[in-house]
Image 1 (tube, rainbow, N blue to C red):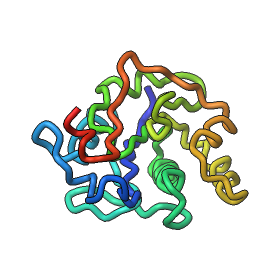
Image 2 (cartoon, one colour):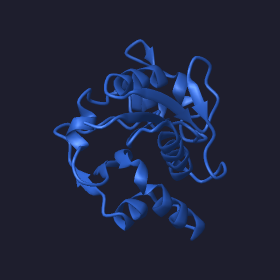
Image 3 (cartoon, rainbow, N blue to C red):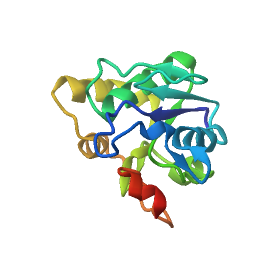
Length: 171
């Protein structure tokens, strides 16, 4: 497999959650640490997109904040390209149960997303110009961008957690 940048998309406001999701605990560890560990197991390096987080390499959303997950993904694709990495494996900070073979599961021709959670995906760095054009045209939907670049939609054997409210951690 080619060299991969792990990108934790963490620029959201967590309005439904009511506090900082990244620092919420699940099975004794912060959500951000669980996602980082899963990505680090299969990536050359890991960055946090859209926020400053002590102890992590952090990059701001691009081209500006407020673009949702696509701003974090654009920043990660730019960072990967500048670092000579061929792909970005993205995940939200609210997916604490990522499989440690996720990159291999999503590998194949072009981009791939997890059907039920499109913020989790494997994106070629070469998709950056298409994403820039999509953002410039006003696009904000991750599913629409994935469709625009004909990303494969992958069903995982087990559904990923998607922590939106504190009670999601208890399930």
